[in-house]
Length: 74
Image (tube, rainbow, N blue to C red):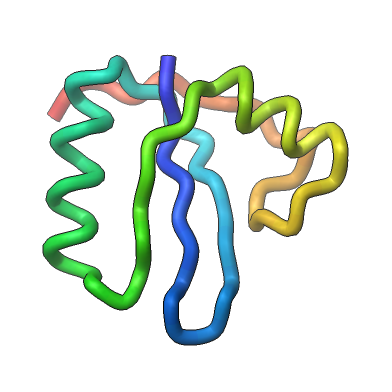
């Protein structure tokens, strides 16, 4: 499963979403988000990477205690 990680090219803020996607859905969403919001870089992360980054205190917006949620395909 995958999540969407983002970083602003304007102010440097970054975060990781809590919705879980399969790879195909994540790829489609990242392409759409990058097209619609060019000032924010979106990329696909494996959910396990996002969880381990949260445990070590990354600077993202999601807290380590926030559960991930399965997202239906669009």
